[in-house]
Length: 251
Image (cartoon, rainbow, N blue to C red; front, top):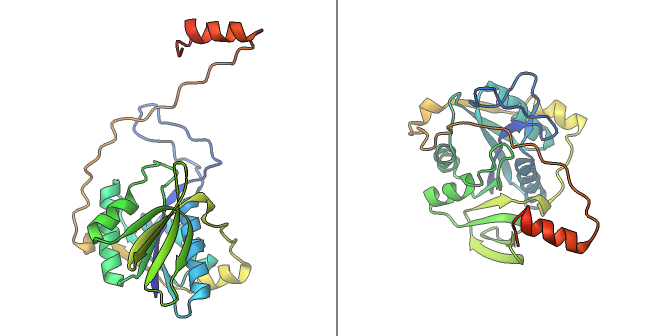
């Protein structure tokens, strides 16, 4: 079977993010970028399936500038077989990303598509669902467990939902988005890093795909969240109730 995994380049979650003074974006000077953590979990799940199912090919794809090669090489070093980078320097919204992925999925004739449930830069949580709609495929989001049938014709996914867990079964091909507890991604080994340099990384200009990726969503401005006020120590329960009533006005 063939598994396609979407990989997004995002700012390091440990970095301090600063908004530009004019609110048009974030300051990117000297900012470190990594693989979106949820995408890394999706890669790991694809590799675990590959280890169980003989003949499985794992193809990782990313969209962006040539700098995204770094994140794809990371996925190749983890164990993916080959990579595709769609070169697109313009801003893309979730719908544009989904249309690009749809084109790649149909071209690659993938059996299963794995994505992170969301990217940590915009937290949109939309691309996987939009991709499923465009393809007309079944989907299971927020996956904490993925099991394939013995013939690899169907999948059962345990989803994390409000109030507990939910099992969803569907016939492949299908879409799965990875949640935090799906697995613990492996570190790339030194031999894996060496092998990654020789693995195929194909670049495709977005214009060559022949699809409309014009954004339907426009970000008007960005702003840092207001600083949190210091807490207050109260002397009694009654004082707390009074403050909640008179100052916080929540009761």
